[in-house]
Length: 141
Image (cartoon, rainbow, N blue to C red):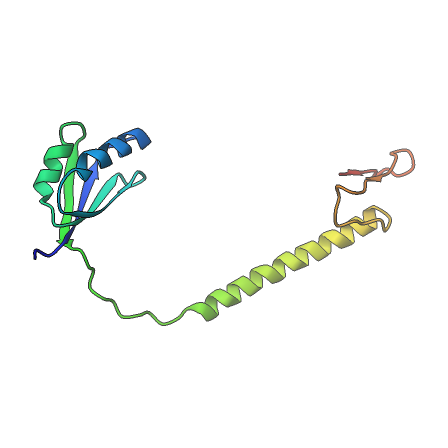
């Protein structure tokens, strides 16, 4: 049984319609296990026992096509990297603490400017001050 390989092609497609047509054109070839197209990178990835030249022959009728790489389907196993969670957790905790400090400062500001009528749900209550009585009059909604 032939070993499957991973073929990556650069394909000059521009939109979802081209993507759909290219997938339809290639899917008719025998020996394909999986297909995927990344519109952002304009790359077609084919895994299976299929000749890359046949794939290019199908696609070059409508789109400019280049073979980027052909190799084994399975990538060599890499050693697991040591966990980097403690550093990420510290950053996440720091961001959460900063957000809480900002919310507390905003709450104190609202209590000071709205004379103690702070409501964390501004859609339920309005804080109105006429300009004549308070030069810093504000409308919160």
